[in-house]
Length: 142
Image 1 (cartoon, rainbow, N blue to C red):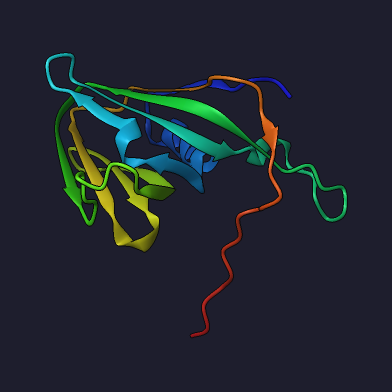
Image 2 (image 1 turned 135 degrees about the vertical axis):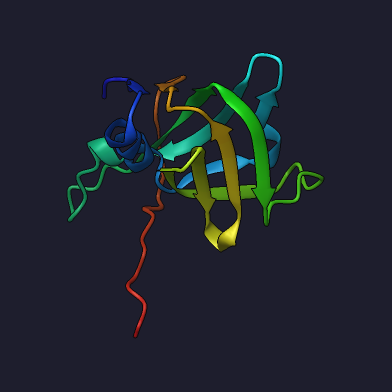
């Protein structure tokens, strides 16, 4: 499997990064904002959706990936306790909002990155490893 190295400069690009990071596992301690550099970074264990066979062909893998978002003027968190540094979060989606980018996590936690535009880089950091778990999102009964 080829290592991913992607960038996003608009909403369409960000949707691709979001799809690649869906169900990524992120420790609270692996997210950081450098106020002076105006950069938010995180390291995640992402599920390799782009190379997923299954339906009996199996091949389930995860890989460590780094996400860097530049131009971040402020970070707002809701439903995420920064003192729980070992807490593991599951990233569901990233999407643009007026004046920034939202990162949405399972359980209702969100991070709002206030930024003038979209300038993100996603890169796999090492080789993938096998995992027995494939994330799933069953449809809710209505």
